Amino acid sequence: MGQVGRVGRVGRVGRVLGAVAAILVLSARGPHAEADKYLVYAVRFATRAGAPLSAYVPGAAPDRQVDVAFAFWVLKGADGRVVLVDTGFHRPSALARARATGVVSPADAIAPLGIHPGDVTDIFLTDMNWDHAGGVDLFPSARVWVQKDEYGYCAGDAWQNGRPHTGVDADDVVAVVERNVRERVTFLRGDDDTSISGIEFHRTGARPRAAQWITAQTPNGVVVLAADAAPLYENLDVPQGVVTALDTRPELRAAIEMRSLAARPELVVPGRDLAVFSRFPAVSGGIVRIE
Image (cartoon, rainbow, N blue to C red; front, side, top):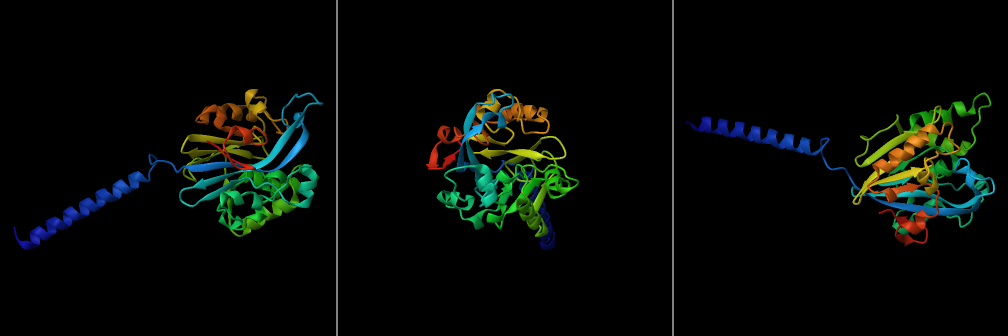
């Protein structure tokens, strides 16, 4: 065989090996690739004493009260992604509404984790109520992820024809709309397990609004961040749904699904229960690691 023939064969072999390598790379990135994992923290920035239990548990006796935590979550990814699941609140109107003590600005509450407001890359809003979306403006670089129907209602129909918009604050909505104008909002349309590796979004609630809860892959398995889909452990122990929902039936289904998805039952984390901050390892006075 001549020199030209040998060179041609080597070239063909090289191209074949290159194609095989490309296929292997694509396969590694495909649906069977290992999902990203996150460190998950619950951050308490305020506490309310003596809240009526009936605000969280349907059918609770009117005279029963419960102390609740105002909290959000931080997800830290190995790739530098820093996510807040909800943002708390800080405006004077929200502080008066919360009737809370020990209030710390959400921007300051994350400092013990070594996170500055500008480090936050993403915000997952479980809904756009004042106690969830009230701190979006504190984290100016973050991309907001929200259910499209929730955004559409809170930024649109909620303010038409005298419709009730209890729980939705105009300044909070404007902050999210401004983020959208800057092309820093991603709309979710129901359940979504493909947009971010290791994260799943789960829609709940009846139309026209659309709340959601989040699951995250961690080194210890799947953690479920229930938010208002299950504000207290009592909502999970007796899955009665949430009294503030327009239709409790999706909340009942959500409670069952949350327990089925978590790596362990205790990794379903309710959104308002103070017990979260005694059941998990403390990082600082108001922060625990969910593991």
